[in-house]
Amino acid sequence: MGNSSGSSVEELQACESHQWYRKFMSECPSGLLTFYEFKQFFGLRNLSDTSDAYVKTMFATFDMNDDGFIDFMEYVAALSLVLKGGVQQKLRWYFKLYDIDGSGCIDRDELLLIIKSIRAINGYPYEMSAEDFANMVFDRIDINGDGELSYEEFMEGVQKDEMLLKTLTESLDLTHIVNKIQGEIRGNQ
Ligand SMILES: [Ca+2]
Ligand SMILES: [Ca+2]
Ligand SMILES: [Ca+2]
Image (tube, rainbow, N blue to C red; front, side, top):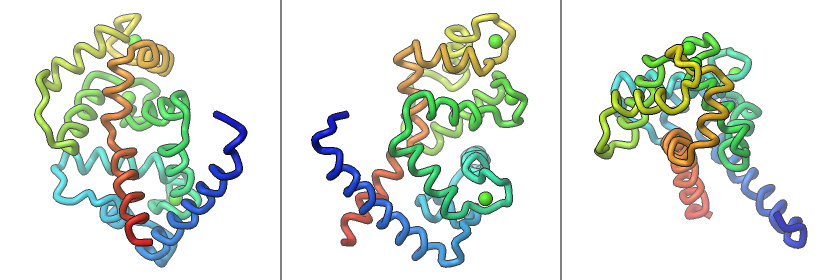
């Protein structure tokens, strides 16, 4: 990152935060986003049961104090992760998201559910079946072959593997959704 343009970048970010704050407060005057409002906010409609469960898990990882609502601080934390977070930071968050039962490992069923949900949300066809894709992930990064991905296996394996990194991180499409909303915010100025 260059230092010469630092101040203008910060100004831009401050300006954007303000826009995001306005959007948050206009769509959610109470200051607390429920799961239903969360889906509305990100334009997620008519989700299948699988996708709905996935988005609910996503909501839960953003709801850091587990009170069932996303407040403005949690919203800002989520946005800054999506917009400015580094790879490590994002992967840590993905691990938490994918480990649905919070056991500290991602098992095959959890990964399969995630892959299916991501595909349902993205809504375009894939060459490889979700089952084959899950098996491939385990072949590549379940180093000790116990059928579960530990935090270390996930962090190291995904970072070393360009294709998995791209698929597992870009496929969440939250960045894409956020970019879309940013476009709308800019358009309304
Ligand atoms: Ca909360
Ligand atoms: Ca688990
Ligand atoms: Ca393992």
